Structure formats: C-alpha cells, structure tokens
Length: 467
Ligand code: ADP
Ligand code: MG
Image (cartoon, rainbow, N blue to C red; front, side, top):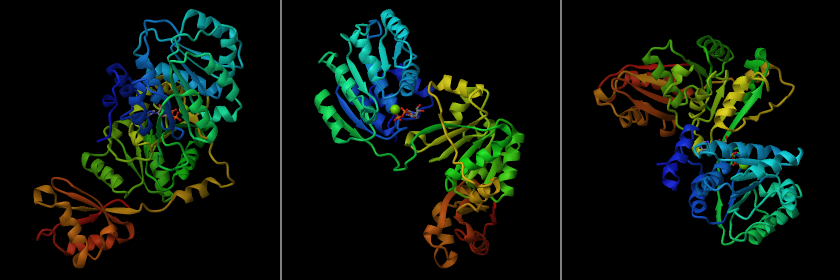
C-alpha cells in the first residue's frame, strides 16, 4: 500500500488540492518530509530534481500559516528568478483552498518598486532570490518579525552562484525562533556548515529515486512544427527506446495514422481507439501489460480507465483542448512511484493549449530539447524498430474452466512445454480465456506445444496474437 497524502497529517482541503492536481500519492521525499515539517521541526533534505520538493515544503508551510494575519510568515529563497517564479506559482496552486492567500515574488532584474508596494499591501509568503530579498530587508520594505519558516531551496546551487553571503545576511535578520528548511540535490561540506549555522536539531531526509539521471518525475514539452510532429514523436521515443509508452491523440484519425506509420517501420505499436470492440480492447491492453506491445496509441475515450502499473512514459502527440484531460492522461504514469515522464508535443511557445495546461496545474512544463544529431528521420525510426520482448498467446480457457495461472506455467515449462520459468511472462486469466506472454521468439513453438498438450487434463486452443 502506498502512503496517502491523508495519512501525513495534512488538512483535508490541502489533500483535496493534491487530488485535483492528479497526485495519486506523495513522492518519497514528500512522505518523509511533510510530517516533521508539520510539527515545526527543522529539516535538511536531499533529493533529485523532479522528486516533488516544492510540495514537500509548501504544503506544511501553507498548513501552518495563519491566513487571518496579513503578515509575512514564510520566506523561500531560490537561486534564480525562473525558479522563484515557478515555486511561487506552485505555492499558489497548492494553496488555492486558502482564501485570500498572498504570495509575493521578490527577484532581481526588475524594478523593486512593485515588490515594495506588494509588500506594503501585506503578504503571507514571499519567494525570491537572495540578493533582492537582502536589498528589500536593508531598505526596511520587508518586515520579518513574523517569519516562522525559512526555506532554502536548491541550497547547493545558491552557493555555487555565490549567494552564500547574501543568504547569511538575510538569515541574520530573521527571528531566531523559526523553522529552517534546507533542500539540496547534493550535500557538500559547505551545505553541512550552512545547516549547522542556521538550523537546530534538523531532521535529515535523503531519498534516492530510480538512479536514473533524468528527473524522477517530469513533465516536458517539445516544440515542433505541425508537419514534423511525427518525427518529434520518434525522437522522443528514441530517448527511451526500451520502455513502454502510451501516446495520446485527440482524434481517431491521428491514432490510425500514427499507428500505421510506426507499424510500417517495424516499431512495436498498437492502437486503442473507440472502434475496437471490448474483446480487442482487452486484448490490446493485456498485450501491453505483458510487454508484447510496447507503445499504445490511444484516444481519450478508449484510454479511459487504462490501468497499467509502472508505465514509463505518456506522450501527448496532440495536447487536449481541455487541460483537465491532460491531468487524467498523465495520471497514468507511475508518477507516485517516481518514475513517470510525460512529454507533450506543442507547436511552439504560442500554443494556447500549453498555456492552459500550465495554468491549471500551476507549474510550467520544462522544455525538452531533442538531440540534434545528424540522423535522418528514417535512421531514427530504425533505431526504435524491432519486436517487443514478449509475445502473447490467447488460450481458449479461463477461470470458469478451472484454469489457473500455475496450470499455464506448468503446461509451458518442464518436460511438456520445454520453456524455462523466466521465458514465461505475465499471465492473465479471465472468465473464459487467458493470455500468457512468452519470450517473443519462442512464442510460435510455445503455442504449438499448448495446442498439442493439455491444461488440467483438457484440450484448449492456443493462438498467437499481435505480431
Ligand atoms: P523538485 O523541486 O524536487 O525538482 P518539483 O517540486 O518541481 O520537484 O516537482 C516536479 C513535478 O512533480 C511537478 O510537475 C509537480 O507538479 C509534480 N509532483 C509533485 N508531487 C507530486 C506527486 N505527489 N505526485 C505526482 N506529481 C507530483
Ligand atoms: Mg525544486
């Protein structure tokens, strides 16, 4: 059972927002950091990019906030303007159930006047870069008497960028009785020194997700001219050539076209659209779960309710008109298990559908720049072509025929079947039929053996499905 947001001690309104955002469960760092932060402890957290650190510190900060008091109660320092803007957006989204929540952004590169005015009007939280925050403190525009929580986000990058002395100046102006939260992707000695200087009895939390160098959870956008969309798709697939993917389209015609082009090139792909009857729909999904087909091209209607554990990648070949659909689509990746990626193809920065997705989710998609190697489209396609690792066999008997998974394994392995256990993959027994996935090249032989032999003393028909 994965841990739920409910069980971390968060108020129900905050839990509801996480649900609305499509977060199925807390990430590892969130599960570890939220409870101690809610009880006011200092914390030093190490985890990778994309592991959900913003919500890990923002949710407890929002919960501890006294919204009736229009004073600055929390301050977040980030290394760059862009990160500050992003964190502010995230905090506002996560805090949208708090009436009248005000979060100001205090960053350089723009006149301080507007920021001074915003502070004078009163704000609950501030997010900014150390230099500007220091200036506003110096001029008296920023009053910190009520600051209960300080967050140093991406502390290692702040040090790398030379913000150490500015951070020190800011910290000196804050109340000594405060909660100090420090997040960093790495914990070199300077960070440890910073922690011991600014924190008291900090809880240490360190998580190691997947081990992949790519962000553990990521939402990306790729800009492509409409007539190069298919090539962009191929390039995205090539970045994770060995993994499974669902490719969402807005129209049945696009599903058909994309599937045809992938299949014609020998890429393991199949379609899932409204024109399939229930039997074939189940069959395609079963093959996908059994790794007998690696990419599913789907419409929203047909893709509804797809339940695939450990799905690596969701691609929005066409972004939906309604951003809520986006959230449903990408909810399919194993995001809570911190491995999913979602990549959306968009025409360009002017694409209104990207803007509406970003407005709804409250965070911007990171632009993914595709590797611009010399390869031609044809070469790239060839690079992702090839059979799926497994191939599925349909057996004409199921639960009602008293067939159980162990019986199928038994018929395929040992003297009768000739396969070894690790050559047999996922088995799904339904009422009147079953699917078993076996190593791709062994599937024809396995089907033949099943046809000649018996399962539970009975003869059943075995048919290869897919390609
Ligand atoms: P970090 O700061 O660790 O790099 P972020 O806080 O920016 O990561 O989160 C990365 C992405 O993960 C964001 O798009 C965010 O909306 C999403 N996210 C955060 N928490 C969850 C969760 N529990 N489930 C699914 N997605 C999440
Ligand atoms: Mg972050």
